[in-house]
Image (cartoon, rainbow over all chains, first blue to last red; front, top):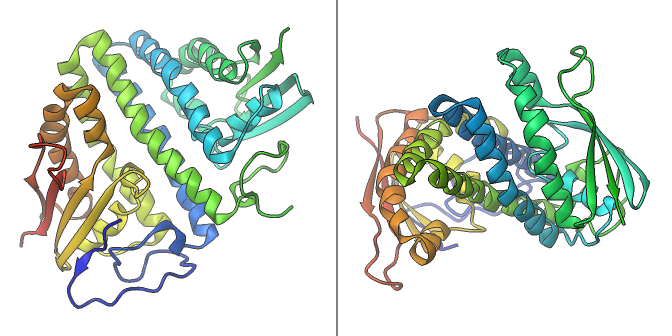
Length: 199
Length: 188
């Protein structure tokens, strides 16, 4: 990054900053912050990513229809999801073509972060596993909206989208929805999926 | 378990958390999240262009982005404990906007005073992409989407802060830098 031009301000010495409540520094960068702060910032980034997706959905639902919004979302997911897996795998050195690799990629997905989702990962064998989403903020929001959009989204978008992600890892990987909305109660799980490699 | 430099090892099925990773790795992930943040917007625009035409896609893209600054900046302010309503406070949050990270952008900030800052963007990956692959997007994005969206950023802090583009694409050539220049100034 270019050095900033600022009159009368001495260069700040980077430390493990807990926050940015101190003076403005035009050269302030991520390494200046503590790990705890970076974790919080990472959660904000994933929240922003989900916000952007949600806003596109909202605008399309308003301008078109729920049906067309879902179809656009599926189209967008088909392109996006392999890229998400690609870039994160490259950054995190995630390699392999089995279910364990797929689960690791999903764990790192900005749409699926630990603070927002509560996921139980059950790897039965390297080629078979089940993941259970116990808490999903998007589902809760749509249930509160009361228009039933979660039934369209979860039942029509998620399977092709997750399949696309899975098949980036291995074209023979199959996703099977075991449980999908509507939920039986507020304490019920959001969804549950089986993933297996078919030879 | 020590700090992870990457995720090449076995899966952690229980208790997975970001804290498992080293600082450097977290910074790498943030850089990728920032890349993906910009990418998904581009892909939404592409899909909607295919279905509804470029004019509608660009118009709705602007509508989407006008809804982003408020929740984004409020979240960043809270996370980073940024207080104050002057221009430098606004720039403190922009410095950590996922849409504007140093992983992808090269820019500098000339601080004239706490309420007057010039941002010189020397490298914008979106512009480079559009110039190469979709030159018809330069005018709609740089001239129609960015100015009102930057102004909305200012409005979150103080609507008296005006964001004025001092230089915008199209560029005269590949050596024409900065790519764009923006002035942030509080007008009393």
